[in-house]
Length: 345
Image 1: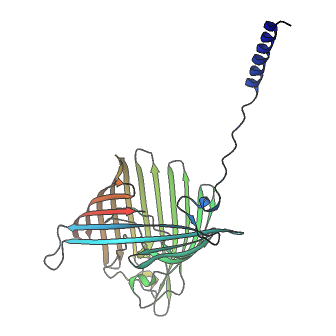
Image 2 (image 1 turned 180 degrees about the vertical axis):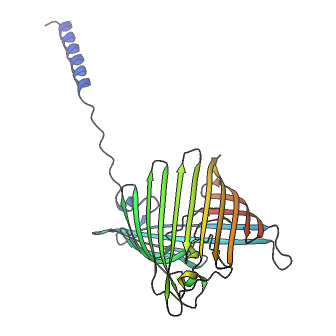
Image 3 (image 1 turned 60 degrees about the horizontal axis):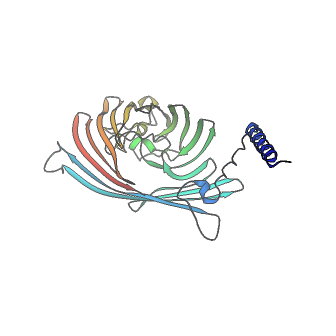
């Protein structure tokens, strides 16, 4: 056989083989292995030697500076300077019945969070379930406080249902008579695309010298995130449970103390908040507004609040948030300039 014939035959076989290979389905890449060990809990978790327990340490350090333009001088200072820190320990490990977790947050030498969890169950001291968190450094922040609680959450697709028993916010700012049961909270959170909605119902017992009355609160929040901007609206109504209307831990006052012996004498009130967040440069510019009003018999209490603030990242983990706010509480006006500088780690 001539050499040219051998070469031509070999070339034909190579072309035919390449054409056949092109017709074959492409071989799929092997799927990425699922994270194991501490990596399965997310970034930042490290293994504690001697077992299967994983630990993540995080925290913050911040400075807050505030100036109020129209205080009563000289008995009231126009400025306030403060420093805060927080150190968080998140401990987790896998078990036959799910992930066991515990969390401890220490802020300024006081324990702000301390709870344990297994799957959807949690028990201990944690953020209030109805803390929906609007506002800036000075303004808003919805309900706010941490509270002792036990609860269960179950996710069903994009919807999460939760039930809690929390330490009772006793007797609406009067400690003379304490509730005989915890406050009961039911919540639903759901989302679809850019829209998310949260709703909560709270049952609160109002105690008197010899009888009780039923206090309630209904709380809801809806947000729409269009990418260019995010709008969030918050609303609450309460009867005999005004503590669920307060913002940034400021107590609704003016003598609005409910009576367990007279259910018709319960206070009532409402709260409305709205916040618009717009990305600007590296940070976010926000506009916030709030109106709270409450009454009982001839007594009343109200607060209006408006604020603008801008959160700007200066470096990795370091950000600043200046804020201008006006708060009018039952006719008394406070104009405030606020600056928060925080380092997260």
